[in-house]
Image (cartoon, rainbow, N blue to C red; front, side):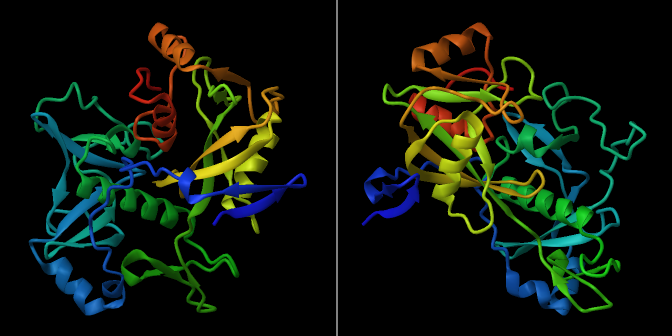
Amino acid sequence: MGSGFLKRGRSVETTAADVQLIGPLLLARGTIDRSSARRVDDQWLERAWSDPATRVLVIDNGHTLVRRTGDEVHAVLYSPDEAPLGPRFLLGVEDGVAYFAVAAPLPGIPKGDGNGRVTVPMSLDDAPEGQPVAAGLRQVGGMLGDREAGLLVFAVALEAWHSTHSHCPRCGTKTTMQAGGHIRVCPDDGSQHFPRVDPAVIMLVRDDSDRCLLARGPHWPEGRLSILAGFVEPGESLEAAVVREVAEEVGVTVVRPRYLGSQPWPFPRSLMLGFFADALDTTLTPDADEIAEARWFTRDELAQALRSGELRLPPRVSIARRLIETWYGGELVGDW
């Protein structure tokens, strides 16, 4: 039975037969038990932190240390005694081992830009085998194994939330961290504050000739294209957000939005919900504040533009890339 919604007097139906989920997405591969009940057990947290088998991921402005060993890339994990001092967050437990993140400067990596941001002395490709290198989630999220990719996504999201929610939104008092880094509490009014997630729809729009719609944001360089996306508004369903965003950004009416999968995108706190949708018309009227250019592509046109270097697509770690390659029917060249 379909679930319908109204748009300009029409009822748009989505049926189970339309849904072909994609996966596994590169930033949605976490395997760890998040152990939510342990977060409020202060004695357990202290015992876990005292256990030399516990592993700690150090996170600094969305970066961590990784090293290459042969064809594999691994995050650098520390024991609690080796980890630098800083706020720590429980990430979870796997195979009897507790995993934490610590928000602190990366050991051995200078901050040389004068603004407290991580500087990266060399790329992972250039570093000698086994040497730790600072890297962000966009660079290595797809290279890490399932467990470490999940740990890094979780740690990046928590660090970003703590860095922007240090004070109570009700009274402005500085809050304190509790529950293993998963709650901030105001000491004045007792209010509790939890990490936020902002849902955003991202949609590959097709016309009746099965062409794909790609667009460029006004602040993107020439040749960088992606599919349309936007945040879900209060009181709005995901399907309605797909229809509204496409109409607002390029003036096209779409129907039959079909959900294909989701992926966290903690920059700083988005959850990307992927859809296909069908265009009722092909005339593009881009909103100049949102879209610098928008174009329809056949598969052959897109492949040729990528081979020639005229266009580049989002990185493979993104759900945008997966949706485009799902429509295309295979892998494509040309990353941002």
